[in-house]
Length: 291
Length: 323
Image (cartoon, rainbow over all chains, first blue to last red; front, side, top):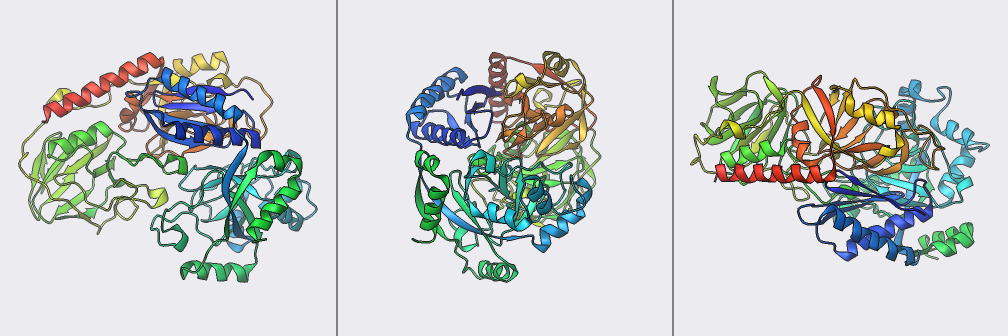
């Protein structure tokens, strides 16, 4: 995998691990981000890992662009040799698929969609060769996802599903972006899933909604008191399909400070994962369920 | 002390020098778009250069003071008035308890910075008082000001009354506007001819120009080098696998209208970028009005660093002038 370096003005070094998305590229981006952080290079002010790339912000008054380039390239060599293992957490996110709020929104912006005759779920199921929306939801919530980037806006996770490339869900974005998306909408664009952390504009297809806040600037949500952003790159997410009653109950529990997302610590080994993807994912789910 | 907001203007927000350190979670640095102007306003009234002030775009607010305060207005040319009496720009003037600060029409530039002795004392959120409205974070209740708001003000001194900056320190955009750009990132994605056109064409600031980004129109459409789109990038040739966006980076969705990301930038996304406006020219963008003719000027890293050094020297000179 040829890594490409380029400067974003005089304050950013852009490192593209690969032009295309893959778990290898994502692991390299994570590993290099960790390497840059651990090396404590003087003058580095921020490290932003993305899906298949990373961005290192630096202060050129402290370190010259040539020197930061040298330092990060040295870390690339070390990252090549690093074991593809991460210690992370797996979290279960409840999703009310085909909910009334995203449904109302997608109907409101129907003229901006590729297929105005159906819903985003109908469309995504059809172009990904699923026989029904239920089958599609089963695939979406069946295998876990890596949080491969946090960003766009505050706390929004980009997610990449942990399945073979031929099973990756792919959908185009809306023809023209919507001016509105309900907060906590579970969406998908290209090969990436996302959860809209705040209400606002958006172009991803909308599949459902989670009752679980993932960004809370007031830090009053029980599990966001320590920090206002829930996700970190490298988190593993497993969606759980829920109905209206469970959704309403969860919303009530969040408001009452009783909602606690199931979270477990896990180690993830990319080599073992590759040997038996479904088996490995089943094991991860076992950890989540306390087996 | 407090300031009562009688009218909020168009979009007036509390800003300081921003909250670095959270871009990897999608929270941008924010802060004054024209940092030089905010620093100057603060130093004029005797504040620390990074104290929180108000940034108002195109239309000034109407503010009533509950106690005596010292005020300086910098940035765009939009004359201030105290109870209807005109006040000089880039100068510390007194506003007495019960008096009202208003503004005339905008003459040039886009954003004024209003510093008050003691600084706007809203709570600090993630290390800054800057307003990030998308995340409802910082500033006054995480949003632009509205009529009826009461802004808390820190303890300040009135000692600097009458202090003024000479003309050479009052920075304003010179016409035609030139923004220096270091090509890079996905520059190789457009044809050589389009690379030439990008720097040769005259662009104009579009109406979609705010704290998140400035859009430009009027230049020729960029043509892409042909390729099979990489997996995960999306089908449009201007798409990439979603990556981080540098501050100042110039994305061109569909190859048509360049957008320069500014202080409240989205932290990443799936559009290719042709390069990045150098750090020394970021302040200037915040003073551009829609329809302003603009040229992008290609520079090397050496030139970018030299410009950065010159900007640092200008800031040092500002500190000396107001010491």
